[in-house]
Amino acid sequence: MYFPASLYFELISLIASITLFFQKGTPFYLKLFPPFLLITLILEIIGFEFAKNGQNNLALYNYSGILSFSFYLFYLRNIVHSPKAKRIIEHLLWIYPLLTIFNIYFIQKNAFHSMTFSLGCLLVVATCIYYFFELFRQPKYVNLLKEPSFWICSGLLFFFCCTFPLIGLTNYLYRISKAISRNFGSILTIVNFLLYSLFTIAFLCRLNFRSKSMK
Image (tube, rainbow, N blue to C red; front, side):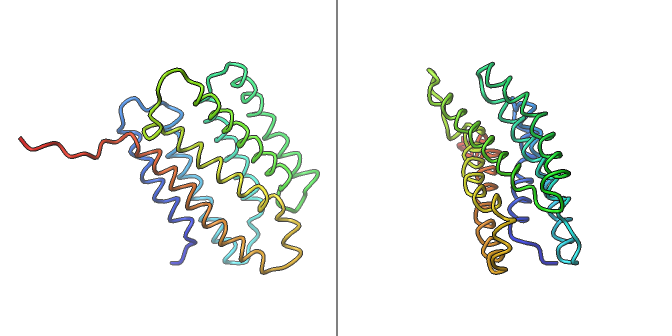
């Protein structure tokens, strides 16, 4: 059965994330990635099957967007250190879903929630930038190659910076040309590949792959 390439990238990242349960000292919020990626993969497969069979998958992607942005904000809330920043993100965790639901039902009815999707992109990007600001101001040395949050935030920053102008304008660009949707597919495949590649690195970066020296 044919599936988009992005689904295979997600599957590889999901498999890699399972190793988090076997890594000593893995925080709880990082262990939430495997179930999150599993749910995301299932929803993507359902959405793909809906589209292939000519069924409307708009509601599925609208509500899965709420899940994704809420999860990423929850994750970012746990890796920033500033108590003030944590409180702001805690408020966003209930304000953003309410705004999105309001937008879906009263503003962008029967359309993709591009307005609140764009807002979600900006919130995640801004929080990732703040995370990097804190990271590079730490007095202690941090081995970035072994820091999962560095790779995850790098992936999120790149992904949402790229998808903000693309998906944020989806409702308008689709009306111009159907060819644009095909170009969107190629671009989104590339950014998905980079996102899940960086996620995979984050999940595996603390593993020690060096073989023991023979006695």
